[in-house]
Length: 470
Image (cartoon, rainbow, N blue to C red; front, side, top):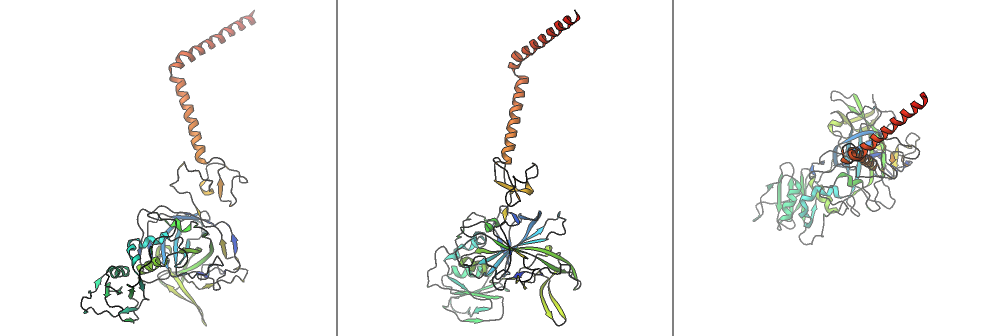
């Protein structure tokens, strides 16, 4: 029996008509992010981005830590924020956060997913982070290549005179690079199973189709000059290592607003088909997402062997248990197809027509707030800080909170100023005390004055006593 609430969403929500129906619109995002700097270049393993995982976010007063980053098939079709935007996403970037080990609130979600839709059309925006993944193939910007669908290949005869022999290449994009750098090459085949790369000097070579998805191929147009700057980043973040934080920053009129909802998935143990536990997940979808230059996406797609897979919840975030990949309804009732790889059902529709579902999706106008990180110093003087980081000084709830109710307004001075001013006063007092106790001026002027005062008091006391006795 399911441990999820009976009316909860059991998977990712789709919007079949491109409209979210009746949603509750709020200004501020309930999520606060904290993204640290990158110490090294990003890398890509299949569809997973490998980087130092020192990032976190906060939701509902609880801390969540980044565990996984994936580029996967589109999950959230139909999500749209601006009426003028009618673009179709090609992929989705999913950041998976898991609740901290010391958090013990059973009502808090155990997982947070931040989902960015990816496009290869329109003006490039928020593209700097993903563009780093193909920076080592920047020379391919001058190569007019076209990738074929997996399963299509060229007939390449290695016995043709001067035709190069097949070579082993670690992945598809290296095979593509080999052909691009050989000015006689017009096409290439790559077998991901054998890692063999075959080049063709014929223009054009015969093309055929096969059922094997391990075969990938492409061709190069040597007759057309390439466009300049094909993979140059168009975004504003051009640092050597651009962090995830850049994805949420506002670029021009592009604001990372979001649709947020809660879902609960059943988890099955490995022994039988009985539900063992559940996982409550807070999902935040960013429809404006990431707009990559077409050339960047082509290279990034090639680096993933021209293959996109479903989002898969990391093993440690589901305790190695199985997830429901698909619900099917038969005459015998609801049946489930289970996944050992963490694939999550994504067929839940949303109509907004029932009272129970009317406000299950929130539209957040503003992107997640940026948390104050440990890199901040006392010289920083922000206009406001999260209440979770302002615990040592009392404040007036009516006057010292901003409109969101989550940030404390410091006022004309910030906490750094208060601390610095207090330290300066204490330093002056200590210096004054030191001078008064041990300087020559103290011995020459202050001590005689004190002695004279004491003598006067004693004389007056003696005269007064004698007068009273008489």
